Amino acid sequence: WENGRRYFDVRIELERVGRIAMPVDVFVKLDNDSLIGFRIPAHPDDPDLPGLERRPVWNAVNTRYTLWLELDHAVSRVTIDTSRVLSDRFRMDNRTGILPPVEWHLQMPLRRYPTLDTYVMEHRPSAWYNGPDALRVGYVLRGRWATDEHRLAAGVFYGTSGGMVDYRLEYSTPLYSAGRQTTLQLTSYRMEGRSEQAVRLQKRYYARTFDEAPVHDFDLGFRSSVRYDAAYLPRGVEWEGGQVNILQVGWRGQTRRRDSPVVRSGIETSVFGSDWSFSKFVLTAKWPWVIDRRFATLELCSFAGYAVGKVPVQEQFYLAGASPRQMFDDRFYRSAGTLPASWWLNNSGDRRLYLNGEGSLSGYANAYPHARRIVALNVNLMMQNPVGLVVDRVPRLVRFYPFLFWDGGVLWNRGAELRKPVRDIVLMDGGLGLTYNLAYIPDWMGSYVVRWEFPLWVSRPSINGERRPFALRWVVGLERSL
Image 1 (tube, rainbow, N blue to C red):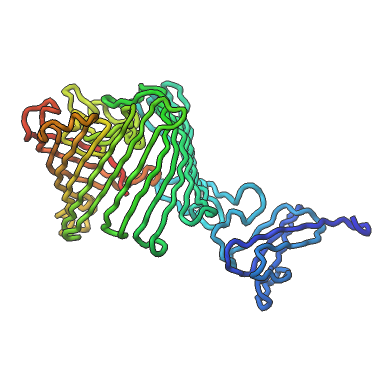
Image 2 (cartoon, rainbow, N blue to C red):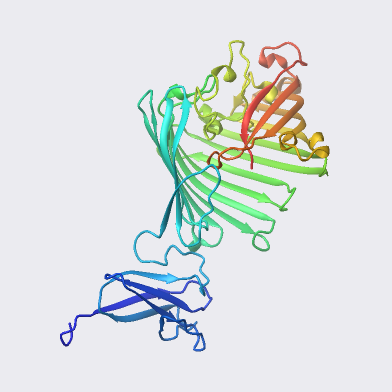
């Protein structure tokens, strides 16, 4: 109070992030719902805007600015208006309060692109099926800004048969204070018999300029996982119990933006609190050789893994497809009952369901061999659909892509196993395959490709309990497309 008049002394602190000096427009909402605006010029000759009160200049030397006001009513909200003049990379902090402006929308099959000025939260009911839960119902949320900050995915699920309540929470955001292209990822879930908590820090370096190869990606992470219910495991898939705590360090390099060799390497080691004590090293390389972009590309892929210590079966290396842990990351392969049990392993001992993985020797899918050490080489001749070269206006025909393949690999646990004759330790297969890009899938499920492989020849049929190297063998599976 002063001279019988009640007033509010208001101080608004502004901070400039970066080197660009531009005018700032500030709107103050009072508790009586009135709105007043102020323009803070960056230079003396910056023009005024109708309806905005001009304030003293905020020069480029000072990174902070204090806006002093004497008002007749209390302030309920302060907003920075960036719509006309301000270069703003991150608009979530332009308004006082805990939460930014939020839009709520029912999630639709087609993607909704977020806006610059609001945080878009999409939500939808969820329904899935697996054996132990029968119908699995839930509700999921996905939130994002137009940029990469504060991306959120969350869900809660209920199994109608067993009454189990599960959840999944994922969060990622850039860490600008740690430099450009640095991202933090947090994951926590309890889903379908397994639970995990993980944190991961990723950093990308461009050797020349932004978004220009060569590119180097580094990541550091920690994850803690445990299996609490084996009833969810599909037929023929093993997952040992006990707490598994792992520290991970990885690197990825790419020399060109397109048709480039890609090399990945990583080290994993168990740490405190883990019931399993082991360490792993992996090295993967892929070389695409474009013979003719209209017709064929030759792909050479190599994989090497070496582990020491007591390694649980889900963390070992698999020669004929994905490991149980890799399968868990795909919703179709995660639990028994989602896909027919006879596809996993029928009464004759044949596996028809396949997920491409480390060794990728699909000819030995029936044996599904695994060990602590592996070396594998895959050669694939990827061809364009011959129908599509002639009839490119029929999308369902054009989506088929044939390929030929040859694979070779070695699995072992101890060095003494490598002293055997080469024909007794090296496994090989060869055949042909076909992929089909699925269309009309809801955006929240991702993009999938149906993959058929016909490994007509294997070097050691006895591994599968067979006699003939040449036979009609086939596997089929779903895999995510990039």
